[in-house]
Length: 474
Ligand SMILES: Cc1cc2nc3c(=O)[nH]c(=O)nc-3n(C[C@H](O)[C@H](O)[C@H](O)COP(=O)(O)OP(=O)(O)OC[C@H]3O[C@@H](n4cnc5c(N)ncnc54)[C@H](O)[C@@H]3O)c2cc1C
Image: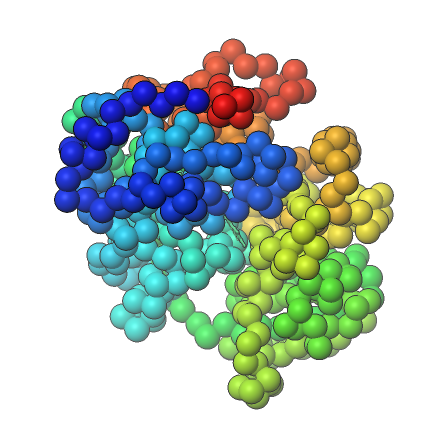
């Protein structure tokens, strides 16, 4: 691919700001966890930027954007690169804007925290907890590595979603500051419904320079693992715990046998191979009532109680949240690199019946992994089932069968916003892109509505961004 922009002049214009142009290091920072998907791995393996620039302040972000605009260089923002769909991968080359060093917690108040976009979520909690006994309401299982800006721009929910819902729910992001990609970049402040303009837009229509998030009281969450002989019993129990309004839990996941035993290697000694597991994080004051509910459940067996283990037994064990969400897939992939996954919604109120029908149909080709969440206020479950991958054609077939059976798929094997979501153009995000990125220089290739407004999703074909097609041919 020809990249005929004037990088040398660009470097002069960003004088004083850290950058890296060693091709091996640039390549490293041009990837995320796209390789979870065999399809994305095939499509995106060759993608790399020309330069990584690491601003540490809003003024430096503005300086980089103005220079890139002047020379027509694409800019792809990156937090810490833990996204799963190639969101932070620069399909047209150019600049990777590494925001990981722009990372201060700026202020903490009752119920909210304001930080720079590169702040790692666990680091935010390390400041809010001693300050006032508060923590971020919901976080991805990449708590220890993901940035808050990357979560807002590329994530959806996670630990805490059983109580608070997802990032898309009003009130789970409070305010954002966003830099536009123009000759003289502006800083816009967004709140209320305007937040939807840039949240989950993959950085295609503005660079987030400040984030205000809501906080909740913090707890020393306790990990509990409960085993069942049947997947349906595990799912019914998980649903009951999710609906029990008096219990304070932060995470409820179901993982089918034999996944946990085979892939959760550090916990293996606690997990019989034939047990379907429910993974729970519970607040200390809710532990006794939760144990009482569990004892009432026929067939429930408590396999792991963090509070009853000696420090020596706990040494080296990851927290339960690092067995859940996309960490379940990661642990499976580490043992069996042929595994991949899907993202499924089992709509309320038939979630348990839908789970049972689908998993009976697929058996061990699709080991179940459910994450219980509040979705539009109702307790239901999302699926992140593992897929014992054979071919891309079979994967497409599995997706089609889910949709026929009433379980919509958020396709994690697509790098565009529309194809990964519900195959609809987000008009709000598109309109904001016209205003904030008139030259289409921010994260090119990720918003089909911008690149090819007449694209027909019913064609059954995967959208191939022109810039990426050129790179593949090069
Ligand atoms: C093991 C594993 C587990 C995961 N678990 C979860 C989970 O539970 N829930 C969940 O939602 N996700 C999960 N993810 C996906 C990902 O970790 C999260 O969404 C995470 O919050 C992304 O943060 P990041 O800093 O790594 O973002 P990046 O991957 O660096 O970026 C994500 C997107 O945001 C854009 N972006 C980054 N910073 C900015 C900015 N300042 N302004 C504008 N755009 C920006 C990037 O261009 C990209 O499109 C998981 C991934 C892995 C590998």
